[in-house]
Amino acid sequence: MFRGVYDPQSVISHMQTCGWVVVPSVWWENSPIVIQEAFAAGRPVLCSGIGGMREAVEHGRDGFYFRPDDPLDLSNTFERCLAGPQTWSNLRANIKAPRTIEIMNAEYVKIYSDILG
Image 1 (cartoon, rainbow, N blue to C red):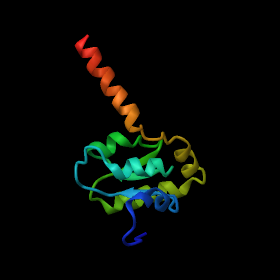
Image 2 (cartoon, rainbow, N blue to C red):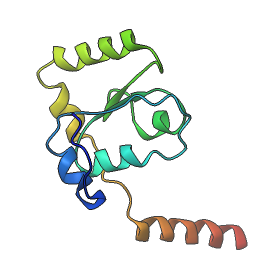
Image 3 (cartoon, rainbow, N blue to C red):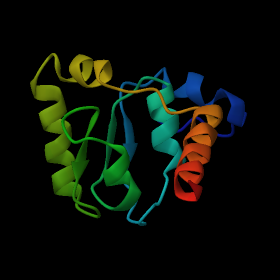
Image 4 (cartoon, rainbow, N blue to C red):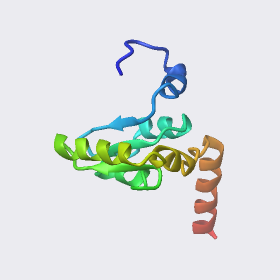
């Protein structure tokens, strides 16, 4: 659903009005922000199964992959999502909230501390 221009601070509330977030990118994203935003909004993700998108989404756990640049596979993925009445609820229940900046910083400090001894 295209909603035109919006304030970037309201992206989460916009996503919460949708059932699914679809990321059909063919670019080998390394850390797709839209997927982090979707998870922050509590929405399952359907994404191309490549790069960082594949790493960010656990197929069948919090979303599904489809083959990039393959409309038929995307369509089949949509059908799988709609076939089971509990699919959306089950995926949504498995979504982990994205790590905060503070948590990521603490993880990096620990890694560097471990390396430096």
